[in-house]
Length: 330
Image (cartoon, rainbow, N blue to C red; front, side):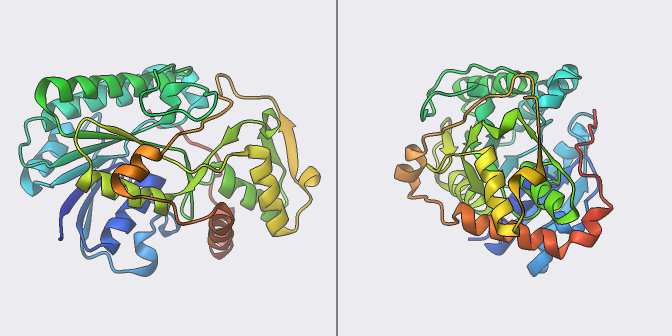
């Protein structure tokens, strides 16, 4: 059945990938982001199919809320999926008020307006495992929040506000918390594309803390499939982890990429100090999602890394002239 979706944060890696997934299922999609659309290398829906069912609107959540709500009232999407956030962890220490302005105040103002939209079947709030802090062993969705960075605090505050909206108003929210997502189209400052680019261009990769932090890397297509299932099938008020059981250290991940590219690990990396407040491990128990909806991941880390290498190689000339670093926008 064709449905209409509004994807907020449509230019983000996760948002753009989810749009591609939705279009592949035949849905009508509206996208909104504060920045103009990026290079086509970061818009998967342009790679393999026509995007006649997609329309983009450049709206800033903090400054264009009225325009965004007018769009919602006019188009009446059945599902709103929100990927929009100030999302960098380490940088949130520098200007924490920017993270609180967007991730707390901006989203709460949005939720207050959306709760009056009785045509909306589900609001999917894409949040983060950062709210738990560093974990010891696999954790479930009822693990208490223990945020350790301004970014994590801002996301936890919005999550708690939304839970209150569900309890008070029956706001049809579902929360998703995914492990470390990756795949073709990801921002170049993220560890996988940055590692591939560094090796292919002969630059040293800075490996913070020796790469000892442990993560579960999950392909964005698997996350998109789970997000769609949760939007259309999950009961409101619930939170779900989207993760794999395969845990690797960042160092092991970089070693895998080096092996694929025939590069020497020691010659390719430079060990630097750890980032302030960085959590040492995220291990998310995803049994709830698997048992409730029958979801399971399909793309192995080995296969996914091959896709990322192929994507970087096919866009290498363009990427050489792009900035590889995160550029903060208040």
